[in-house]
Length: 406
Image (tube, rainbow, N blue to C red; front, side, top):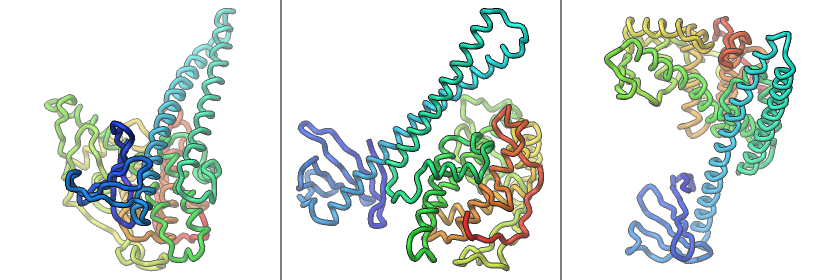
């Protein structure tokens, strides 16, 4: 088991190695120096090469706290692995539930059933209840495991955080999200609440709350779009084989199997213009009432032929995300605003409250405006087929929302 962590603003990696007589914790910094200490020992080795390492007393405060941070990181990594296993079990159970529902639907179409078919129907109904019970049981286990995993004070439990997010997002949209996105939304709301209740939070850093929201946007919007776009382009280009993993160039973007793409890549493919935050506005501690947005034009990044190809793909893609993305200017504007706020959370020294709240409103929504996830997952008739939906009304940006609470 290995893990990555930060201590005193420096990046470290750590792992536990089994030795002949015990276990050894090894911590490596970015310069390649390793601190190695056996379990239960107070003297360790520190250096780039073991034969040249010096003996150090790991009970001194700095090294002791470094080791403690490493052990916490390893524990979190182990629990994260367990969470992934639990989520995989839930996905399998959900697949079983869907198969059972399909079988039930077939039987229920027949108004007259034989005794054997009635027994089969009853058996399927019981199986369905059992699988749904197991899914809920696994979800509760995950919530408890995540609570145990958290390094932060229990300002609000993950179970309560989930209830709050569900009420704000809507059950339909919530059920359509990937389990990892559900987890990220819970964590984002929980971190927000934790930071908000701390003393002297006027200039608090909301990066920990904002970063998970960026992951949700990438997972729910960027990833499915590029995955299906690549498949579409393969059918257009018969000289390219899926198994060869040959890149397909679209504008300045190389599309490959299982490629990694950004929110910035997506906005360029949708529109040559979009509305986004000014550099001035993002430097302010509070949301400015003027000079908040400006219009960007980037017609040089993708040819008109390639953009028409993307529009053709969106028209034939039977997925509600395509309906929302087809609102080229509005979708590109929302995506770029999310991108800029996501970058602040991931790379800046501090994320202000208004920036986090705006990111939340863009993605999840508020009392007066729908977020992207609500826009996409709004149409229940499409949700039946792909667990996604879209509201066709375009997004506008001529408002200045208030930020009393989310």
